[in-house]
Length: 219
Ligand code: DX5
Ligand code: ZN
Image (cartoon, rainbow, N blue to C red; front, side, top):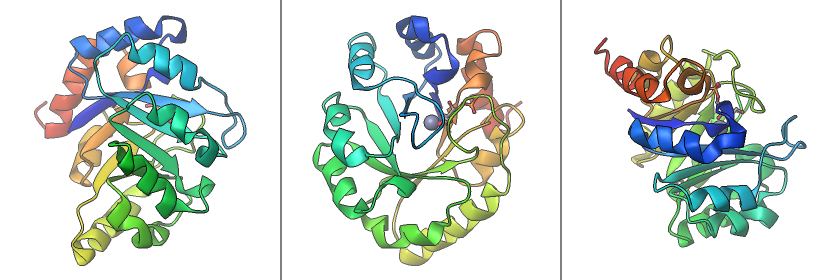
């Protein structure tokens, strides 16, 4: 299981230091929650901050765009050369065009889906999608409770991709921690985004290592 700490749950005044701690803890990606105060009821940081952080870390970036107008803003984030970038299904009327733009930039293209969004809509864009980001909270804030009925959705999604013989990664975001990460791994996720359980539990380095072990069922 790959781990992407969500810096939103860290000290935002010391974001580069938090990134360094994640690097020491061998985080696979840094998850960056871009919120616009419109699609979600919170406002975090934008492209200038993400670009500034990119100068201070060599951990690959995993950008999660929670904005109403990703079409307009996308290029600013692609310019930062992240490893992965997810846009929300609920915000994009022309998803195939947007996913193609992300891939053309050499970035893995993801579709994020809110807890209430059905996955059947994803079928038509599967060939253009590198990963689906299953939201296990209603996006907007770190520290919320994991919504476990998403496991049913993940199971149906696995059946869908197996049936269509396509390979699409599965990432989970929201409320993942020591109590949930094993089930997340068993449900087929190859990446867990973790905020509070990395930054709110003592040393992030140790928290990441422990979560990795728990995902394997090794603790
Ligand atoms: C929620 C964000 C998440 C969040 C994760 O809207 O997309 O990435 O920061 O934090 P935890 O793990 O605390 O739910
Ligand atoms: Zn996120």
